[in-house]
Length: 267
Picture (cartoon, rainbow, N blue to C red):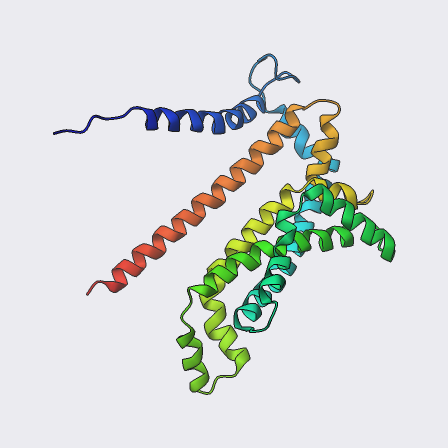
């Protein structure tokens, strides 16, 4: 007896995809609109991309965001990886409380974190600006790296490290030759997630940024007060294109690696 095909799942999936990607497609479409408003379509043009590339303040904001993301991601990768490796080997009372405290920045609302950072930096006399931004972003990026690397270490075989020590390798050499290659995919995943969170952050940056360290989200937010111009749509389109290219490159490299492993495993 043939089962009756249910049409609801495909319809539900189609509705979800439309709601997710239709606004993105509209942003891309109106980046080529000859009108300054999104209410009417006045023809095709690329003038907004030209104006975007001539906008020095937008370029400086993008540069600030990239510098901030680079420093915070690098610092969070080192701190989160070392913390996950150390906590996976540590045995002491209160370990669960320490791990919970490590992940608290993820659960605390950003507006509370922003006010807390502002109060702390003001109390210790740290000027608001790029150093304060790097510290704040590193703080809320560390838990992402820590959680992902800790999950990878749970599934790792401890016998590999024990075998390396039995062969005379020091703890430092075991880490760089055995542990780090095993957890490297998790570290890279945590870094990419931290990069996205840092580039996307608005609330915390609003509280701790200085007059000379305006980030791209802050620049876009300040522009919303006078209305969304097609330059913002053009910027979003370029960022979307960059993300799609990176994802496509990642998928291509993964497919090549799987294909090479399959060929290497066949007799």
